[in-house]
Length: 136
Image 1 (cartoon, rainbow, N blue to C red):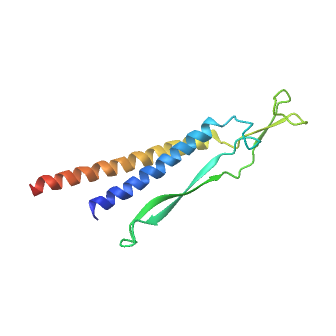
Image 2 (cartoon, helix red, strand yellow):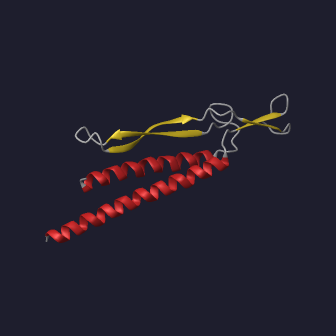
Image 3 (cartoon, rainbow, N blue to C red):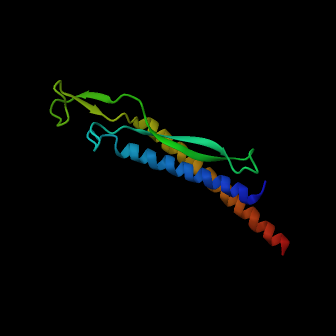
């Protein structure tokens, strides 16, 4: 495999994992927001990744692409809190559908994948530099 292609594949992985980290951080930061500009509580977001050919010349080499950032369809959490300003007539407050434990797992997973892609880039750079030294 061409070293530059390996670097491009790792770069797409870095980008995808950065998006996952950002979306996860947003979900955690908004885990208690009961009122948004759209109305209602914050709805957690999920990142959809897709494997795509690196190029038309190399369809067997796959890079990663962020396909979409979608709303999580899980139901909102309902808590009885009649004193809350966003409580309905029954005293129920709807909280975001953010599962903090799952978000922390997602955060760790995205962080590890980001580190792995950095290692690929670092190794590719080292191999490239070593090859240049041998050609001198």
